[in-house]
Image 1 (spheres, protein in one colour):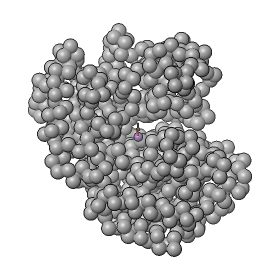
Image 2 (cartoon, rainbow, N blue to C red; image 1 turned 45 degrees about the horizontal axis):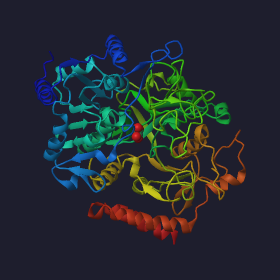
Image 3 (cartoon, rainbow, N blue to C red; image 1 turned 45 degrees about the vertical axis):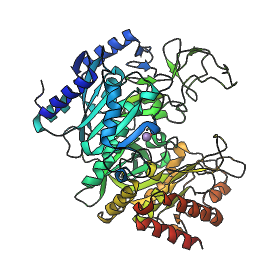
Image 4 (cartoon, rainbow, N blue to C red; image 1 turned 135 degrees about the vertical axis):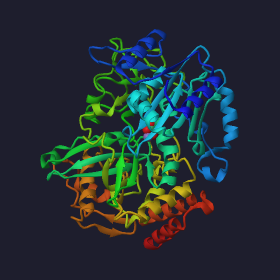
Length: 591
Ligand code: OXD
Ligand code: MN
């Protein structure tokens, strides 16, 4: 039995509430993994996939009402509503514990409670955080084994150091959406998730700890927890520059993090090193610079649209030891998804567990999907061919540039650089994605998602902007901040930029700016590239596209400034004055 009084006390308290039949401590070993898989094959929680074609891979379906993060059921529970801020759902802690407690009560009768010790970041690093998740789901145990450093080394660490840990309690309960809550108690360093089996709601090390609790701790302790990929770009001289980039969901973070250089640039000698695809913890090191670690150890990525063209590195990674969730199960026990490799299968069992054939229509005459649009794979990051050799390095990597991005069909140029850190924080705080003709809803409608953290900031977002501003003042010098937009369209609605691996061409310009090797063009919104400064060798794209990609339309930007002004009202007095100054300065520059 582990000698850690607080851990023992808390487990006892949770067991008294949830009443599991038994408690099992997870050691994270391969033997344990195989034992749990076998157990879940019997109950149907998992299905074994074709071990010849997909060695070590398993399949899982969530219930049909439980396929994505449920933001409307996600709360920050602080005694003072102001501390949760205007962008979060809020409950007083007592009320949160009471409401969720009713659902947790006896929820594990007839089930096992697994004790899952995990570390976000290398075990024992002063920059890592330890959590313990109690869960009644084998799927959660097996995912946590991939997504985090999980098991005995973490218990040994807890015992040796008597360290504190994030208390993470999860129960599937009855998987009823009306009895589902994802609660964060930052002041208690605790997370309660009940009534869901979907990854983002139940792998509590990810969004809940690494972002919501992490951002709260970051403000207290002087670091940043961000919804960012981290990648290294090795240039022809062998020097690696690292960038951290935030995009709202469905903007291609995972693809960017492991892109394959396009032919033209590959010949120059570029290489990409993947550090992380979703979360960055960044702090200032003794050199006064910003350093980042990826606290995760795996990828929980979206399957549809992933194929050998969009992401060849990922296709290699997920060919073994991968958990597939809500994709199509083929007759030969392999998997497929819309936008996947190969021809469309003739038949299979779809994500809802129903017999599927291409061309099937539902009652509204819409095609029935093989895979859910948010179907996923969970895979160890160490299987990605481009993984950095610094993955276990507790210092992480030094960050040269921070990139924000969104989906803007008309407004934002392909790339621009902010004037300075404060202006860069403004660019991040006003990040947005826009609906296009391809989406339901009003075309052009803008949804603001500051730093892509809207669903993930664990405290008042006004204070979060202040924290960003304060961090900039203590770095020597802070990284440059850029904005990119891969999604600009022409008047006929066609994308102007090819995206995917070609995005490296834009990153090359960004890195050159960071090294002060190249001039920028000063405009009202920031510095832009000269038209010929983005290397298009080997890319067949009409020259005039680059002109359009770099156009700034004053009228559109004035409208944007007005929309930002409206958005800033959300924060009332909590908005740092620097943000209003930046808005005024932008308006002035626009004339
Ligand atoms: C997300 C994810 O929802 O990474 O952002 O899964
Ligand atoms: Mn994410």
